[in-house]
Length: 461
Image (tube, rainbow, N blue to C red; front, side, top):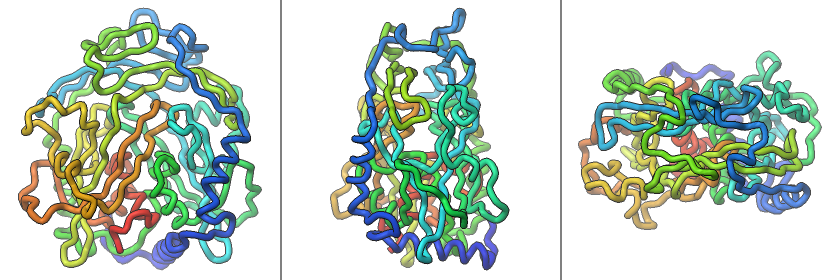
């Protein structure tokens, strides 16, 4: 997280991205107002269907003898196993749960190209079985290693070579980032932005959009998918990362290192059959109290995918999540409140997450002192303090109807100056510098950061 003045090339790239973010209504391919009808046309041009099925109807999946782990017959893709976690403190110091183990590193890549002097980004109208509306804007390439090595014997992944073999000097961003630490065990994906000067044939389900157009679409519910938001968080923004910050970058890194050091987290994989407090029925693996999430199975038809039909397990959360940054301005400089968050599936103890990240119903029965800090401040905020609000899907390839209400909420004037342990005010520039490195910002924080890199939220106005 260097504090040096950006190089001329980096500053030029950040300036070009800023120009792209300023073009909000009319790109070189589609007007922003035309994108929803284009997506509806792409939806209508293919056969899409998702239906729930019992586990016994899964094709190519089975519960392993001896462990009960739910696995694919190929030994690839992913498994649903058990996880035993101990964090030592808080209202839930120990727990067990099912979790997805997917050791492969996938590629999430967005191709960029300049048209009429403005950077555009090649977005895909991609169907994922877990999305409530099925079709959302995704990266140019969104593929696991099993997908692009064709374990499923499907079609080639379009545009993949731009990311497997990028031309010298074409890489804008390239970093390993974590996935949901509550539902994945130590899962990472390669987040990439690659610029090309070559002619690129545009397939039917793809279109070029400016950053500003994507930002406008991020103001709508369930249009831009999670993987695209994660990659867009890596867009270069320029400027010194600590500009206007209440302390230096080294202080922030020292605090973050201290947070990682002070938490002792034990996370061990266990057989799915050994997970306490969960029960397996013919259609679901779930808790008797109906909290947190359940494991289900679906059969999928998708005419636009590399494979047009399959079945698979999915994790289905129980309730709508709330994901929010509290914000403030100090001497005109915007700041957001981050939380050094422990999640059982993280690779390294904690990552920086939003101020609030939870499903409120899971905490409703807890005494006030054990509820997530600042949850009530976010839930009770009046319309005048909400700078941004939209419902977005989480990863639709592994999670069924997993949605969160994403918010930027101005902190109240009477908010206490002293913060609970694990919380810190940072500038968006600091987050933009950290996201260039893996496993600093969790996926929910990256989703919120993408609102700033694309101009979807007016926090930097």
